[in-house]
Amino acid sequence: MTESIAKKQEDGRVERAGDRIAAEALAVYMRARRRSGAWVLTAQLLILFGSIGLWEIAGRHKWIDVLIFSYPSKVFGLLWENLLEGTLLPHVWVTVLETLCGFLLGTLCGTLLAAVIWWSPFLARVLDPFIVVLNSMPKVALGPIFIVAIGPGLGSIIATALAVTVIITTLVVYTSFKEVDANYVKVVRLFGGNRLTVFRRVILPASFPTIISTLKVNVGLSWVGVIVGEFLVAREGLGYLIIYGFQVFNFTLVISSLFVIALVATLMYQAVAYMEGKLSRRL
Amino acid sequence: MSYAVEVLNMTHVYVTEQGAMLAVEDIRLGVRPGEFVSLVGPSGCGKTTILSVIAGLIQPTSGSVRIQGQMLSGPSARVGYMLQQDYLFPWTTIWNNVMTGLEITRQVSDETTAYVRQLLQQMGLAGLEDRYPTQLSGGMRQRAALVRTLALKPDVLLLDEPFSALDYQTKLTLEELVLDTLRAGRKTAILVTHDLSEAIAMSDRVIVLGRNPGRIRREIEIPEPIRSAMPLEARELPDFHRLFRELWQELLETEGEDER
Image (cartoon, rainbow over all chains, first blue to last red; front, side, top):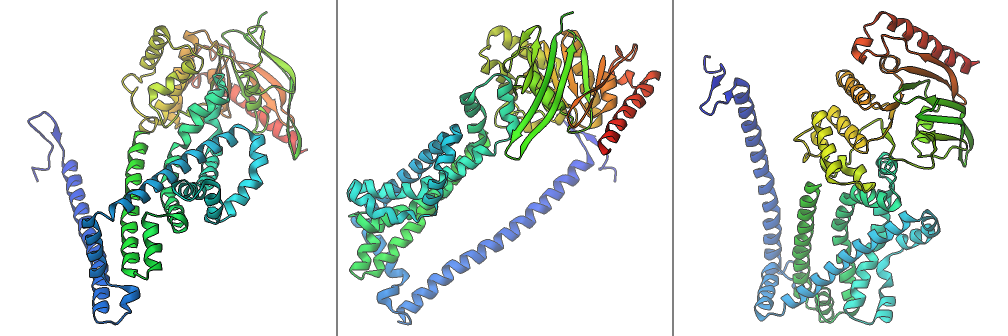
């Protein structure tokens, strides 16, 4: 084929046969990917709408106890109603705020604690058994203590979320601090840098990706802390709606709150994951 | 005679929970200004320990080090150190990497910045300042690391197998570049290496170390014209192979003694 011989284009670039073959190979690959992607999406939608449909039918035909399991149209009806009445969003807002505070504070305090422990090997050895105990302990069990110490309300809910996240953050970040390649530290020490310089120039930036990824883990953990906290004390919030629905035996309310939690928690997780992507690209 | 680097009766012991390990014993070494000295020896002979002591990274258990007649008490800007790999910080740009030393020692000025730019130019890295280390080849990265070290204008350069992680071609090119730079700046250098031909091609003097504990076994002066030839030419000269065999024999005897 005479076409396959390199020819000069108008902008002066030379188009080679290899370039075209590469472009074709890429096109084939992308097409195959798109096709398999479409199949995955179809299967996912099928599962989603299939199960919701089945649930709806089962509910309407009284195959399941509607009082306990409700069914989708009732759940979405209630959600729509509450949304219009303006009684839903304040609950969502309170819970989101508590969760945000919980995981941001948890990550921040955990990182600070890790820095302190890294700074002083003596302190690291002293605190080691305490951290092991605290880490093994189910932190939500501390809820009642927070309530009497801080008072029933926002404070003790955030404290519960903080308790759930802070120790694990400390452990993960401290491990990351310790695992920084000693040769990077050597570079700074060779220039006469002290421990603070080493921390600022090497330890912290090298561990930054780890810190960001603990944010992602902490979003999930913080939700646990906040919902349990709300179970215990709240007068508002999604956890409160669940407990309230349970007490008055309104399971449509319970399920609709669960639905909102799933939605908001996913959104929050995606937002943090997006942020992580942005930040780590900058590194 | 005044030495650029002088190691005086230096002995170093590493102490751990497992016990005390005598790493090097009674090292006496004098390196003249502008001289290039290589340390060769089997692994575990304490080459890197000696280098770390001269760099001021570790305090020897006994004995001392003088740099240009002054007692050394810690890392000094007069001594530069090239590690086995570049160890450029991957989270920041080449520019920030090469400026690291100047920033830590608070020497950033128009003059020093201009000097760094000039070094980058010399090393063929101009225009790559905003790249990240992962975007550069191994040879470029090691050159950037060299700029980072040279930015502080050290009089003494310690080279801890800085070419060992590179492919052969890059290694030869970089050897030439380093030697050129050192000779132009009349800098003193101590190279630790496993590669005997590298030691002969680059050095004025090769020191053979024995192990258990590390001590100096023998010194070999590299004769002219190998001494002043550039590394690539030096490897072609007639006496090169004789020296290589001599060193090789010396190292074999070192190994032999261990087995007894």
